[in-house]
Length: 292
Ligand code: GRG
Image 1: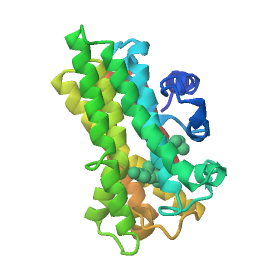
Image 2: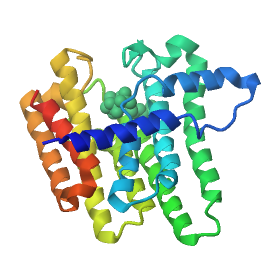
Image 3: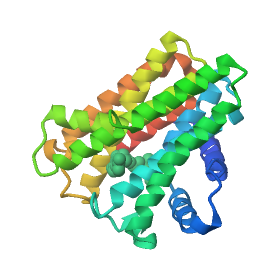
């Protein structure tokens, strides 16, 4: 069960992300200030900050200094935020609201929303590269940073989130097979979550066996995360036109499948106990959501 200390650990990291989320955005000329405004709007519109918190969990797991991890945590949130802005566009999901507020393109127009997404995606990697420059004289720390940045670029790109998104869009009209849903959910959602967990591990200098455990945790919690999101949609009657696992195979089967992923995720981190509070909290939160 989630303890008050695990809830507090999560909240402490979330608050830090909220406080520092704009710090790593490159300075934007006043002549392009509408770009900054649209990026800022999306970044400050109430996300749960799950992915950056998973990066910051490195501080508990490996005693990594916060200032070392924070730029990587914020970069993941920049990428997540860009993906939501683009996902909401008329050419994609065509949503008017996100987190109960008007979507970026509803407030700033379609062109500016596209550019805000582009700005956030490039800001993520500009800020990570700038941050790496600080470690040129320390090969061990630089290696950690390079591995974390590579993991993030792999998770968000054309063999990760973007690949999952295109397959999701293209399969919207067809009923999906189990394999197709697994592919979409893994790439669209789990890859970025996996990258967040692994980034934290790389920054903390994890060994090979811990890497295997964190990989299992990240992938399984990521798969469960998408299934739970779809279960929520079915239960609340939202997005009923979407082709999802829960919509196709029903709530019972989707819940059972999600529970299996959560168990695998929890088993993978069990031995880290007190150092894995944030990871455990997220797994338990998903369990609670499934159990209503
Ligand atoms: C546009 C390249 C591109 C990709 C879009 C993220 C995504 C891929 C689509 C959004 C639609 C969706 C339901 C994705 C699944 C992942 C998911 C559940 C996103 C929402 O994540 P939360 O709940 O969001 O962490 P908050 O609002 O808390 O930031």
